[in-house]
Length: 82
Image (cartoon, rainbow, N blue to C red; front, side):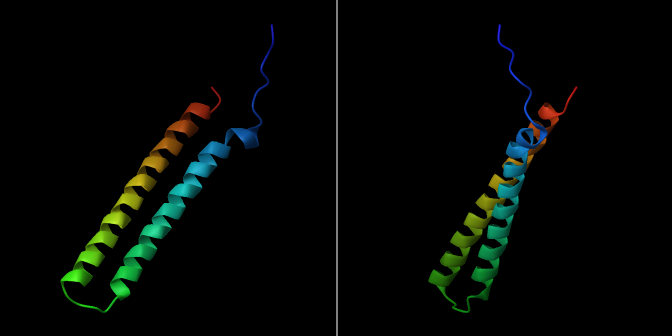
């Protein structure tokens, strides 16, 4: 019978840290997208369509970041020693 060694502490938290870092990066991207779209001075139907598209993308980034944060939270709870 083979025993599997316990994961090292730093290896055990790597997935949680990765999810958290990616979540933070996505939130930062959403902020940058919104700031960039707001800085555009053009007016008109095409400009509004562009800003709407950018806002839609920013919302999707935040939704993905929220999902990754939830996943990291669940994974961290699962990894805690009992």
